[in-house]
Length: 198
Figure (cartoon, rainbow, N blue to C red):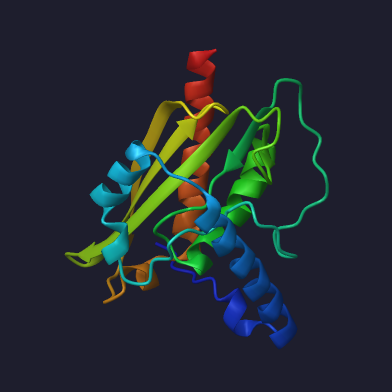
């Protein structure tokens, strides 16, 4: 299995790191302003987010940086419009890889990723992550709750992504490619559910 690590922040210039830090500060402030319901709390406690080494409290996958900013995309009629709430449980550099792939794959799957829960959004997606290492491999557990604009949970997508290798901080064993596969799987599962629900 190809094991590439994304270390864009470490190789970047001080100005770029400052820009990423500003986006992160905004994202964390935004995450602190969101409210959660009992189902979100249940998922977080099930995944044991607070005790996962290296996990960020919440990171917004919608935050746009120069790396994931893209030219406006043309979408077919009936394109889904999604907003992602801040991701809970995964470190910033892992969410960055996930976010880039969500943006690219969203357009390929006729899914418009909206930067905010604006009018016309079909669903808000709340993602919860945890990683654990055992028996020579690391497993990323991911749960995605799909909410209507009125706040009603209508669907849950969940899965696991396994990679070879372990680390005291399990997230250090997770390459960017694993996060990209999670993004692809999530969008594919969402489209399949949306097709059945229509």
